[in-house]
Length: 482
Image (cartoon, rainbow, N blue to C red; front, side, top):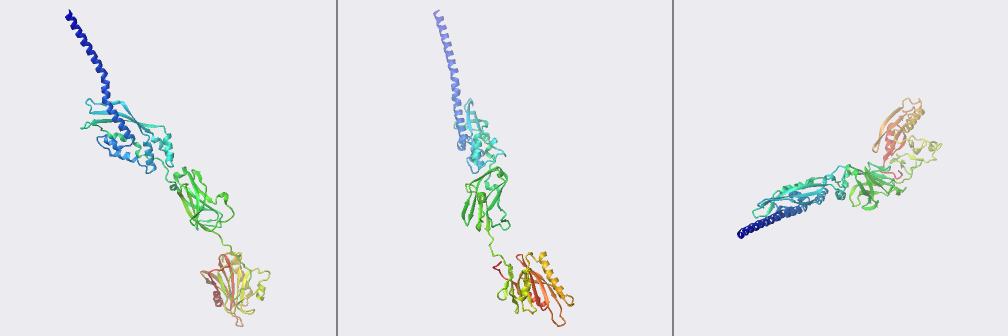
């Protein structure tokens, strides 16, 4: 009996011990699994940190092989040579990651493992729009900071041990899925000077062909804004230089969505009746930072004040004179002499206040057969003006009428006369030889210069003589009275 009790006790004791051992084994199993996955979680944490930091070198050291495309992407995201590159770098800074520890799996032999890592970054597609134009990085980074939409990506990283027992990443290529924006372009404005046309000048005193202002009190300039520039805000000022010296800078001007930008010098509120000094004016539209948007040079000049031309009758000293308002010089042939206003023939001309505007008269004496007169025609500005043609015809008709029917052999002839670089026509009337063997001829010629028209009257012994006498009229360099 005692032996049976002892056996039963041993059986119960053994059963109890087995139960205790079984419980200990069950309690130890989670700890063993945790010990197997923890290195994988740590690897994933390190890998995620290197990805967020764009540290390709460290990623490569954790991998069985490299990936040139991933290396290029990460290297490019470090550069900010232009606005688009800068924008991509700013987006990469929003990348965050979290290791999903409960997804870790390890093979029975511990040679292979996998784990999921969750990534998210700003939804860059929300920042791409033709309706948005970023002027510099600040508007872009402001929009980036205000964007709450995120793109979420979960990557499964796979590892296996190498021959040295080091656990390495085998699918490095999946990391590229985190950077679809690596080649994205955003709607950045170019430099402002690429959106602007040529600087042009205007104003009632401006001659576009000569690019010159004459007698002006102001300079007005503008430049057309092109393309996307019309959706921008332009901050600029007007600068004016003369002889390399800045003589004027306007306050900063701000315009939104302009078609043209420009300003006047002086400012519209400061324009007076005083004309601007002569000179070459360089006018520029510039940003506050000194970027020249548009620039041009314009000449400013003024009309020289001259003494009014006097077309009254006068008697020149000597045998030469320049007809008022022109550079036509009259040098009398020998025998001819300019006559004073009290000369008998001139007195007849001057009756009733010189209505025909005779300015000079010369002849060879009271009873001579040679003479010269110049008659100013105030209502004409070219030899073809009706007023000029009327005066010519009136004198020709008067001479023919005066001759009457007593000279049946009279001849009327028109010839060309060149004076300087101009050619005019002279109408001559030759009475023909009289019974006494005498002969006279008269010539009438319209000449013009600078819009000043004269009727030249010459009389002589025949047509050839008159043609010779037209040589008394020449052109000189200038007349100080013009």
